[in-house]
Image 1 (cartoon, rainbow, N blue to C red):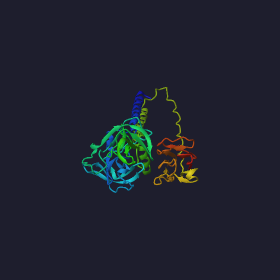
Image 2 (image 1 turned 60 degrees about the horizontal axis):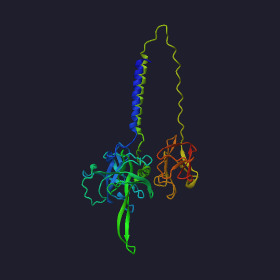
Image 3 (image 1 turned 60 degrees about the vertical axis):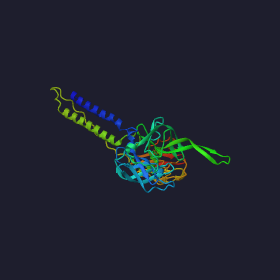
Image 4 (image 1 turned 120 degrees about the vertical axis):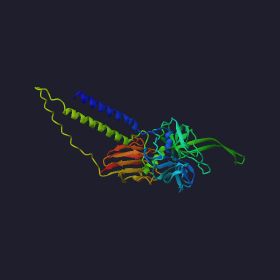
Length: 418
């Protein structure tokens, strides 16, 4: 190979390497807590007002908003029939929204806009297994009271306020995973995002609990009281992820690879390598003939291309219950099968009182050749037959006959392929 060809190939390889190294920037992450304000909206309903934030795929138009259930639902759980999502109250820029999912126990709700919009940006999710609990956090939202008594005149993006602080601990309150905060939660930023310094949403600002000092008289009647301590909480984003998994709303987890960008990168690298190969062929064809008396050696025999072997495919994938509530029952996976207690989302729906099983516990997906099992952030875990617990949100490839269980070994299933 001539020096010129070597230089060409080396240059192209360096370019391809540079493109590959640039993939470091394709890992999903937020851009900073200040930019996270581009996701926050004002929620106004017959119930009151609060904050919310856009969910979906970053850098794409959005159609869904997350907020607190108490911002759009009455105390008896009845949905408000008049919910508006404001991008700018001053400019009267808003859309009517529909409540498509709510969980009053977790105080969460998801709203759907009538059409997509670029007024706000979808947030990147940072679940509890990726959070730096010792870091700095910001509660974003609109200030003020969740009441129409407030004389709000602007409530534009510039009015979005933040409070800064930390997370004292991760704990459970009732049926929800929450963070105990040392920053202020007020009625205005309730429903807004709790974000880290990268602008990734780790939780939903939700509620506060007051501790009281009470004085009574000799008859035991309360004569006076005062608040001596207030605890502020945010619901972990994991709880919202479980809900929107059932709705099949796309989202991005912090650290996930931007697959669209990777495809573009891969095509760029392939194009560069193809150009290098073409230059090599053209240059080789123009090389000088061998000197007289020194004929070229016989060319090596061309290796035959390996025979193409198609991937093994199966017409049907299913799971069969081996123990517990679904013993001896089978379920087709189709393209996607959800397992949990939420009968509205899960085809494999356990009773509501099933111990150790979350609302939307795990999922199985099938692409015609391979089955993957993924835990969806369940409280008690999804396990392989050997007792190994699956990492939340990470797909695990299953083979025929593989066994797994949800919560406990009493709920064991076996995979079958036909």
